[in-house]
Length: 493
Ligand SMILES: *[C@@H]1O[C@H](CO)[C@@H](O)[C@H](O)[C@H]1NC(C)=O
Ligand SMILES: *[C@@H]1O[C@H](CO)[C@@H](O)[C@H](O)[C@H]1NC(C)=O
Ligand SMILES: *[C@@H]1O[C@H](CO)[C@@H](O)[C@H](O)[C@H]1NC(C)=O
Image 1 (tube, protein in one colour):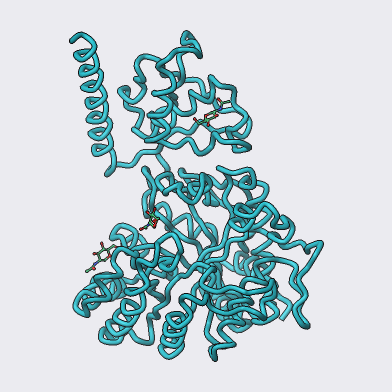
Image 2 (spheres, protein in one colour):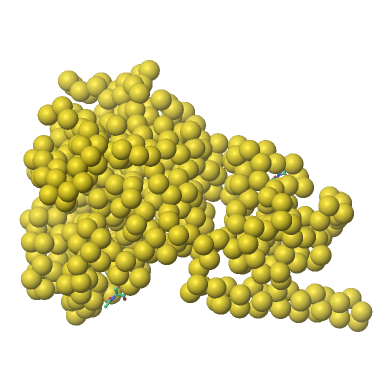
């Protein structure tokens, strides 16, 4: 069918009655048009209130949400939201789930049955998150499958066997192709048998294969990767594979998986794209223009409903990610804290057509701290020997990932660069005066130092985190004071 989901989106917006919406949903389902989902991660020092995030998801037309755990506040906020939910079991719980059926039963009881009864539309349990990443050194190879099996048994025992399915979000390197052709795809040799065990189980129990696909990472880790192949506008040198021609990496990667499944006898297993997206900062290829280009290209691509050469039809996908998370590890790269379509405070970074009649809408009812910033004192010279320690201190505890080469604040002069680091630490510590100390090198200003693409943020209020943060900064400053005293004592002795 030629009709795309955003055409339906406009029709639905025009029809105010709930009945009309229902008819629209039924029609969308009938043409096999899939809804779009979002990943909601919470590794932030000042997360938006869960109710605010749920409203934001609904305002912007997301139909489903993927979580990385089953946090109580998050789950409660999703009650009667109408959003379909994929809840997650973090990797550090896999061993417990694998070794004890009782633990799996308890997890399903507390984190699925409970919330279902409360009106949370849980449809999937994601057991683990990319457990076979090479950086985990095989830590989860033994526990992932038994955990999947136990959670599935627990779901059946709870009477939810047909309502809630298990899956396991995997990174795309669990399969590979010895050539660049998708038709040469198969599962990675070192985990081939394990993958078949998992795939067979998912197939037998009505589960789905979830895969995270990241053209950005390919570009980031390989300077020879053709940039146009990451996007969806056609590529200068497409990959020809039999009768199929691939002009974008997404289709080729997805079909490499479909070939791997097919080759091993599971060509019809449902596939979910668990994460797909592009970061906006922290790397020369991470910016607003490229993120919008990629995400809009992807949405438009799947909106045709044509799918890929090997799997025609709708693509089931969750964008990564909804909101920036300032406490994510930057071990994969400085871009890691910048995957959000929205900033930490719920502002859209760029426009995206998600099938609504309006553009992206910002989060509602966000409360900011005062309009003030911590900056380098004008009287301090750049040769001051205390500067480098203070900058390192601020950057190690706050966030300086926007200060690198070709990042959003990469063009700042040295003074502003230092101010950015100081302000990041100050805001992260809820604008506590003590956090703008820096051995008297810093001062507080009411004048916004933001310029061009570089935003000096103001932190948002987080009631529950507030007192803990204050205590944290006071105790770390006390520690610094003690160290200074110790140094003084030593230098006098
Ligand atoms: C339910 O999920 C939460 C959040 O992930 C976790 O802390 C808790 O231990 C889980 N409950 C059980 C009984 O395992
Ligand atoms: C994996 O091994 C490397 C090298 O031996 C080590 O540096 C790293 O910390 C290990 N990672 C984990 C998650 O165990
Ligand atoms: C700005 O700060 C970052 C992080 O501290 C540093 O890597 C970079 O070299 C600095 N640039 C300038 C112009 O001072």
